[in-house]
Image (cartoon, rainbow over all chains, first blue to last red; front, side, top):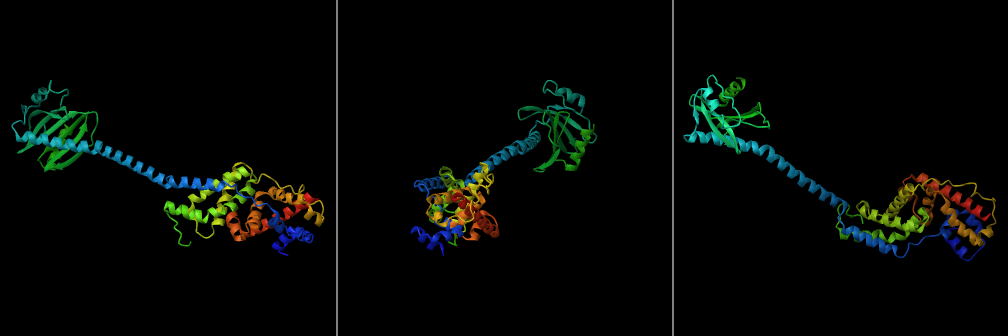
Length: 221
Length: 179
């Protein structure tokens, strides 16, 4: 006896069914267990929520939006860091070189022409609020000193010579140390370093080896 | 159906495909949820939740059988809910209370007694959920052992043994109710 027969017998209240039902629980369930019908408004509710879901940005789209915001922020941050880190250093190097070139182009190389460090150093008194270290360096005769301005603050320019070459050594106090560096711009060599709260920039058309020798002599004396 | 787009689908097309393949199986979804939760209100909420879940993961639908696929989602949604509520596997089927009072209940009275038919539903509701789900999927949805094994995430052998044990318990429960 299959379930369909059982169902028919049951609908007719046929007593012959009883034995089969007891031996076949599967049939009892199939024919008599309740099949729950969904509430009539459930389908409409589901369709509505699906439409809402479909018009809202998908989770991956939110993710994409979040990712692009993050990317934009990190780009902006990187640009800001580049500006604050790289740009000022390069700008300063350009300014230093310009000051060097200006000093050579005109007649204003020296405010105080003297080969005597004891004349040059006191000359800065009252003109700047720091005392630049004016040193006698063997092989690099002192020619004198001059007042310069970088970024609105005064700087001392100490002028040294080497054969026909002029070396400008700029120095001013700064709370922010800079890293020791050497570079070449437009055929001029520049060396910068930091010590005792002072920034130093040496610039000259002298070759790099001799400029380096000048710097190490200055640093050692 | 085999040429189903599984990656990012055009939203309008996705909704149309979903309504065509999954929406018609709402009665099966509700029936299963109702048998698993044993109350109307929760069944309705969980079916709605399951439909949303199914829609969101519609890309994983292979396009073979919308009903079995949907029932798997409904089943998981319901069992997660039962577990959260602490209703899953906490109930112990009382073999004693539901055991047959007599080994040979009067066959005729079983048939004619309308109370017996009412107690069938009660007995099915009283079954532990792991038996109840395989019986509903097999007897009411007439799914294959393989399909049930996929939905309930147990081997086919387990499906068969649960079915056999569930039927046996049901039989005992019925006989007990009639006795």
